[in-house]
Amino acid sequence: GIELELSSAEGIGPDDVADRMPRSAGQVYVVDNYHEGREVYLGGWKIVPDSSILCNRSMPTCNKFELVSGIMRGGRGLSEVASVVRALDMINPKLKVNKSMGFHVHID
Image (tube, rainbow, N blue to C red):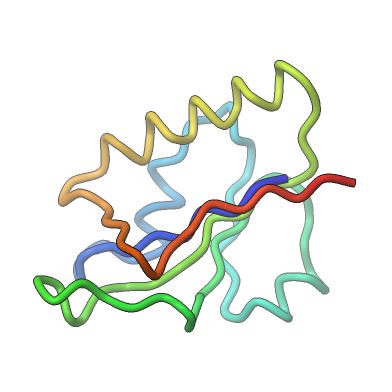
């Protein structure tokens, strides 16, 4: 699976991001804390807070979160990632990334 660390403007919260995800991503769950997300994870994608992220100077009160996929396999998984990234790109105001954020791939 993958993890995308992102930030959004104060008026665009994790629930708004979840609502804009494509149907191909399945259900997108917004979880209040990362550890709770591990315990109640139901498949699909989840959005969890990420305190390691720093807001940009231009957006000091941003929302900081991580978008985490479920288990992915092959071309179907890559297509799902592409669909999610396209959906993220269409959110306005734009989601932001900076040096404090990353993209993680977990391989088992």
